[in-house]
Length: 498
Image (cartoon, rainbow, N blue to C red; front, side):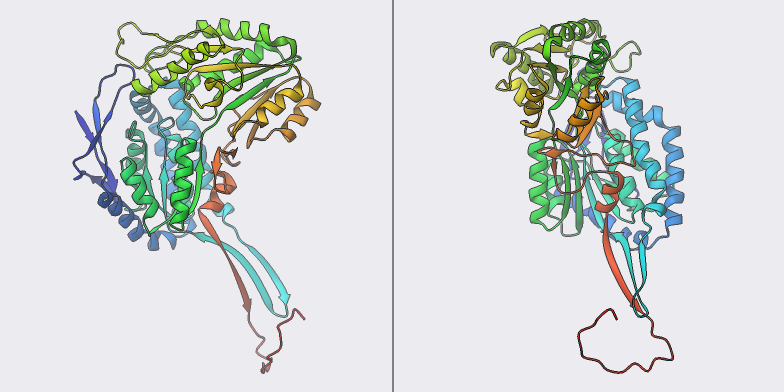
């Protein structure tokens, strides 16, 4: 069995904690790898390496940083199939989906390549006689990133390329369920010429997380995961005096108005609900059918759902792979049974699904629940699996009240041909990311990603300009160079701008 350790100070480091976690192949249920779970002392070693590397890296020229980033981008491109294969082997998503994940992560590397433009400061001359004022942004120090299992390459790339482009050093704690992709990203960074200690990977569980949250040398923490853990991360980081951005969970609604193209809406509902087995915080988990279109819309979604091919992620014929663990699969399946007991109509039941030759894999078919009400557990909870709920609403106003009544506000979408209704929706809906006839409105790299309400803890979203501001701190410099002809003199009066 393979053992995966840590990447600290530019090299592999074997763990001495004696604690390990299982890494499964979700398609077979086998455990080909075990991952080292760091002790607090091993987390300290990663922070120490980052702290040692920080002074030189923070003072490095923008040209030096961007030269690395361009080389890194080329290596990522050359190895994208390899990284995608690691994702498929440990997460289970189909290879095409894994390739898409790598590509979206590389968008942020490309954004980081343009960091000289993004870090340009401001200058005001002659604000007073011979006085100039400049604003600049400087790195914050050692940054920690704690990332989830559902995007083991993309979410780390949402964080560390921008952080190091801004002059910080980084300690990454990836999910212990599928850590190999993040480890490979660190290896490739070293191959691209990143100095030792600028990027470190410490594998682990809550022990490592808690140590990073309390460590005095960690200045900032980025997190993506569930809402309860995001709240925990924020509270722990703030208590230790750190800045924090913690992105939580979601219950994303897709509102379908009666004038929408129902075939187009059904296709997009399928893609957004069941892609990556529903294990993504931007998945559509609720369709709100407005007016009399509900029956026809549900019928078209059901027809497509029943035709989906579920199988191993490395099989080109598979459209959806398994879930991450057996326990998670069983939890997701329980929501289907619970919804039926609470009065929902189970139009498509994906529970009990098996794949021939992969009977021990963590497979679950897709499920479609109709006539779900807001009181049901399947509506209230973030299921994080291939379960789509349909709620009926008589009017747009009823639908918008339903969506805005959710405790989450990550992403949402409206499907309509009516530009006025779409404009009204994008202004009235309480969510951080809105799609108009786009079911998963994940922003491109130069815009920022993040939700509202219980989907975000902290003030700044991730990547884009918000990400750059999070990984830097502002400094204002006021300068006066007296003319040599001035005699100077003493003046104890209050300074003015005359």
